[in-house]
Length: 327
Image 1: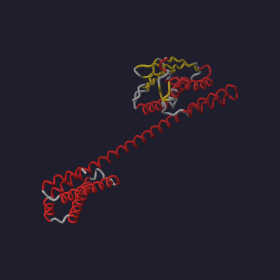
Image 2: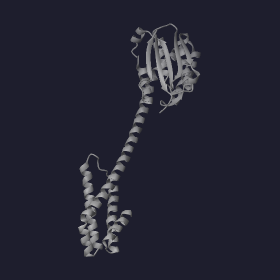
Image 3: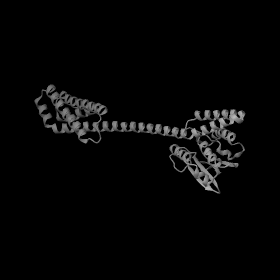
Image 4: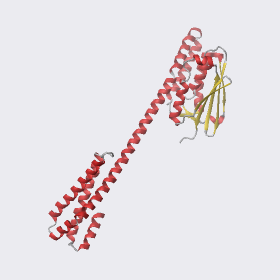
């Protein structure tokens, strides 16, 4: 409408009849509008590839040429004034440039619009796929950490059935409670540290039945850390690792220490257990559990520095850092 009115206003300066200039303005701008709508739907349903510049230019040339020839046919059909027909012929170059600018502008805007929209959809799909892959990997990592603990517990229950059925029954109940809590939690869920400690207690009750007086757990938990958030089921595999390399290969009583503190918006958890080089070298399972926890922390926080291990005074110390300010 704006272009039609502007077109009509400009033509009035040439002192032609009002109906002729009105017909000219309507035909010119209506044909351009219809061609632009056609281009809009063509680009929407059959978008040219960004790498195929020739295809895009070809579409524009066809559109501009078609517009001009349609206008010429309509002018000859609706305008019978020879003087005005000659005026149209004399202004052919200007009309072609006018058609070209409007059509190319519309095509570029339409193409840019659909290209940006398509890229947004692609990014959304990519992010969704990455999220699904990340969740699948997190689930897979956790599933790899659980089976050997369950098998060991079942073996212990089997052995206890022959010597102490009461303890065996207690261990079955503890194992059921532990697994129930494990199944209910999603791998990428954040829970409070207190909740994680409660779940860890179920696990340790089972291990204490297995190892009796040989296993002692010492905790130094700062009160302010109990409400901190961390990934569910992140501590149990590390404590299991500590028990494995602390108790296996020795008949003596061992002490595993769990400490926590809050520093610079980081929840710092340390688990330490006795360390024997010879025992560790003979155990081929070393490292998988910690590598899996490190990978899980990276998937959740995109940082590679959240799990650290050190050896000091025959103690193997595992440190977990959990950021408390989520981006």
